[in-house]
Length: 316
Image (cartoon, rainbow, N blue to C red; front, side):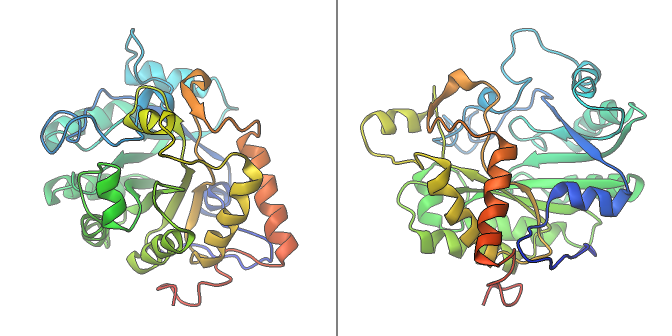
């Protein structure tokens, strides 16, 4: 377990921006990248069609473009959107450890040729990190200022994972996190609130599961219905419900934050789409900044904070 800073200010949650400032003393920005990876849940290795909710171009800005950009070109485009700073190269699209270790090294090294890139963040599936690849990432972690690996979980309930066609169970996630520990690598979990068939208590179970797994970070997403997905067909048939507005979502999010261990970095509070026209529902008008402000206001209104109800890291 990495020695993460902790805060206990009432009405507060542990933001990624705070983590960066405490670790580096200055802002750090993540630049999303598409390195052209596929996914074993799409190419027939373990399944076809992918997860029922997933269409990568909806959230990854460089994914699905007809004219592919090199890693260097994507980094240059991303750097234009922020002030002069240091950057994390975020390999975001699909499964970014789904290749032999030697091939992965060539791809990651392309990003590290940029002198302003001080670390890597690598999004992947928990069933796509054999020890050989973790050994490679450990080597990077010892040489870089920071390395995050982001494991998609979505839910701790195997029935839900089967329902959304994840192609792995919760134990695969726990195993991947366990094998990542002690390597100097920070682990982040992706979860979705409001998945089909899940109750609030089931979502709280997922939070407790993250606490027990001792992850370093979490990204919250709300269920979104994206065009070109099996979930879109289910939604059109009335088989799937979503949070119609942010006011319905934020209280549940705060319930989860209260149960989340206070040393887990909250990297995201809600899902985002890069291309609005791909989103079917829900069409919230609030920006990420407004969602953050609503979340903070709700926590302050309750006189509570992240971890208020967690008790221990196991969430007992």
